[in-house]
Length: 284
Image (cartoon, rainbow, N blue to C red; front, side, top):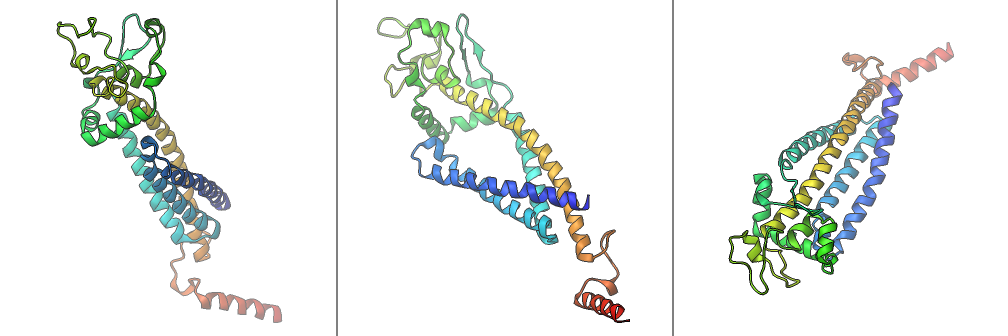
């Protein structure tokens, strides 16, 4: 176990060190993109890439060269990472509860309602600055352009993504006359709908709900992935603790832990004394 833990930590950190390079390169590439949805990821990817680079470098140096202080920094960073991942995972499962949409009778798609989502998600999506960025992403994705040529039969037989269902058409319950909306009581989104390609239902609550549904699905998948990552990081952390103990043993030159006897600590006179004793034994 003495060499095994150090070797595994060394190889794992070399692998993560190399993997941080394409992450940083991808973030820098996104920085040159004019698309709003892509540039929103730029800062996060760049920060993650540099954190992985620095943490992996500390772990690699500490495990391969038995540098105890580098391994201590590595283990401290890993502990913070485990704590952060646990918090993010628990928060992700908490805020992604609810939603899911309601299946429309006789149709393949579902429709989504803003009130079905958590209060935190609703408060974020209704803030002007966040919603402006979300609408820019929806418009830039050309999701509505894909269904503009659909016939009524297509709407009966084909499925829609949450964004297409909420932003590209009025709610199915809306009824329209030849030129004006029916006088019967209807959802407010029925009055917000407009056939203009730059308006559609982008101002509807159903569009906000469709965006939240897409976010909820992606975040839920990420939370499940985080559980796997946390288990893996905890296993690596345990191996890192073994490597740290090995590094301390190599410093103390004692096979069973830290040598607390001050007179035989591995200072310069200790190594000089051992060399001189070996030479004397060879002479005599």
